[in-house]
Length: 167
Image (cartoon, rainbow, N blue to C red; front, side, top):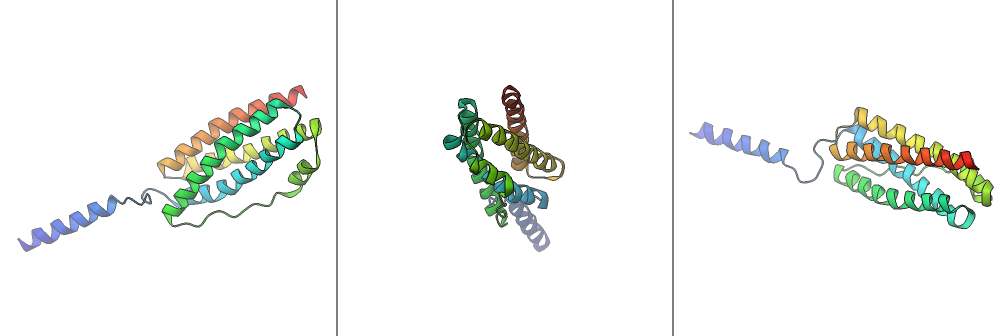
């Protein structure tokens, strides 16, 4: 009888351990890396989008920048929540580099062309990171976000290529 109680207690402990409410079960190092890299990547896109109202003359570019801000800010908060639940530190801020300096100095149609070209490259980088998450990650939520990033940003790349072609 004592053996059954001990085994039953052990089985209960294993079961309860698998029912963790912290959200840490099911993630791996690739999920952590995805969030740590995507957060500063999204922040850079937000910084780029915030330049548009004071520099662009194209309402379509302004609309796109607004949509990028509205989509990526909640994604940043979601990924920060995962990193906190996973006990992982946040990603490092990336340097903006020469592209950001050129954007800050430009206005009008020149700004729009530079912004669209820079954002296309930026989105392509995010799509590649998201594809890596799909291939190597294990967290269902992170993989779902990666799929949404690929779908949304690929559609925005196509839209931006169309805007560039008409300018």
